[in-house]
Amino acid sequence: MKKKTFVVIGMGRFGSSVAYSLCNQGYEVLAIDSSEQRVQEVAHTVTHAVQADSTDEEALRALGVRNFDVVVVAIGEDIQASILTSIVLKEIGVPFLVVKAQTDLHGKVLAKIGVNKVVFPERDMGNRVATHLVSPNILDYIELSDDYSIVEMLAAPSMVGKNLRQLDVRAKFGCNVMAIKTGSRMNIAPQATDLIQEGDMLVVVGKKNQLQQLQRALGE
Ligand code: ATP
Image 1 (spheres, rainbow, N blue to C red):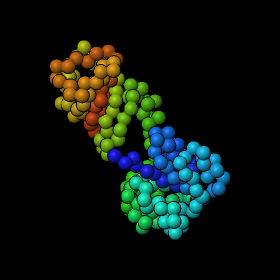
Image 2: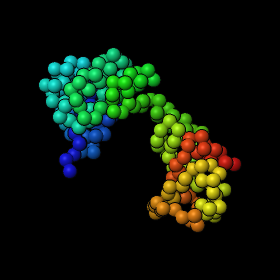
Image 3: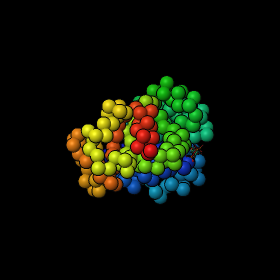
Image 4: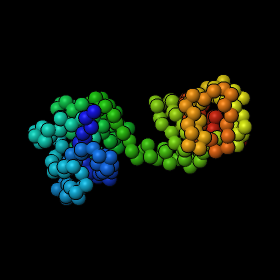
């Protein structure tokens, strides 16, 4: 299968981190920035780096941006440039467009333009750090929607030695245990009779408020 190819526009901290990470994983990355200095700084670490103003449709067409599978726009402070760039990229017809938003309003505008994925790196990382601070036994989580998440949580002492039927998280909290990890062994189809052991990690899906209730109940 052909490997995906990427364009990253804006070589600030976020954009350069996306570009380096993709390159390290062996993907082709074209990095674009309006600042010649930024282009020089990343030139040795990405596949191609060019200086261009991404609000200039002709410049993007000349670079063949449309032929790449994914374009990431990581322009932060200049919201106008971010929006104009996104409109130009939609006009050109890029297959998948990911844009970093600075504020909620910026995010709403990007969604209206038809951007495929709007990301809020600072807000999302802030949420993640806060969640880890208040719930240390939450190892990781994925937000499925505004209401639903999947969380990876350490089995609380109160769960150890009980099976899923006894814990009955579905009836009590409306959440589903999707998988149980014991050491390096992953049980992806847990049965009602499966016992929870000390150090187990549970993957649970549910409504955010119900997952929080489960967390609180287990913490007691
Ligand atoms: P970060 O927080 O990721 O460091 P930021 O949100 O502060 O970045 P900026 O520094 O404003 O974002 O922009 C990121 C990069 O985007 C800068 O290197 C800037 O030169 C570049 N940039 C801004 N406008 C354009 C444009 N029209 N075309 C191409 N690059 C641009």
